[in-house]
Image (tube, rainbow, N blue to C red):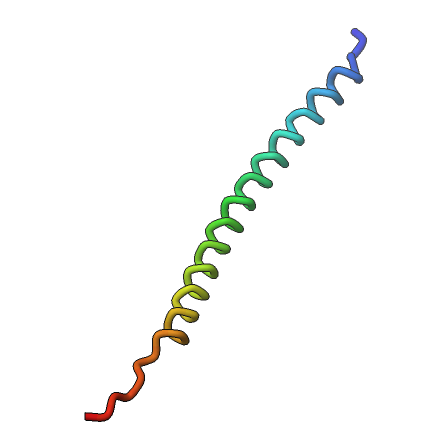
Length: 58
């Protein structure tokens, strides 16, 4: 019985490619969540810097 090595290698490559694609997708989602959190922190920090109360003499 002759083993079709080219088909076996192509199938294995397709499986590894699918696994790598899933890993890249998960990493992109985590990076997006991190970027949103950093943007929120920076937005709050800038808002706090520019909204300081000025002392009002009475």
